[in-house]
Length: 265
Image 1 (spheres, rainbow, N blue to C red):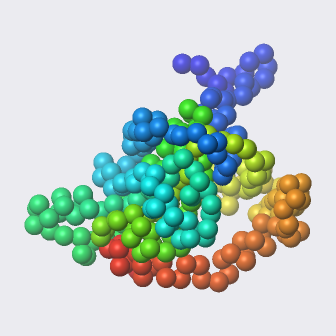
Image 2 (image 1 turned 90 degrees about the vertical axis):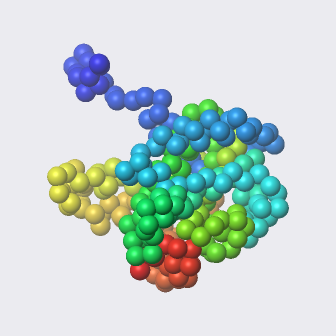
């Protein structure tokens, strides 16, 4: 096995791979060619994704492959009229699914009525891991896409559109297709601000501390938006995050999840 960290001619050789380079170059793509994504392609992507880690082999997720224009038409307004939900060649709905756990419990004389907080959390994590694995698998064969968290704008309406039974809710969706256009990559927060060593707060390479890092990111993100002609504030990230989260976001979500059989109270 090659040691990537071993010095090469006095220098440390950069650690990279096709997967690392794909992730470093990743962008959210919302415009697609008028070119289908075949069933065999989707099946290959999802079969690979289903090898993602799953807590205790629970596999508490399901994916709804949505091609029907009538179903898409119901999802578009739920997701804030994101046109790509209707335009993309395929839309994948990643769902936390407790139905098989509930059936296993029923076969052994039990139910989930008093034990669905951890089960719901595990199912949500499982579905998220599968979704990201699917995204990476799709990119590896040239597909591009965008995650759609706005299906949670109305958990009940999304469930009705997808005919989800009780104990299932859609965590997020994913548009997939062949890219028509590719946007400029949005800068991320600096690495040193996100990584801690051995204990939280131990960030020896972080210049000026966390607050200074936010100031730098505000300026970097503002410069990016100005370069692509998108209106922004000088304190771009902190301004937008405050605007999004200072009020209660999706205030009905907890009650809707409980209605679906996921009690996160």
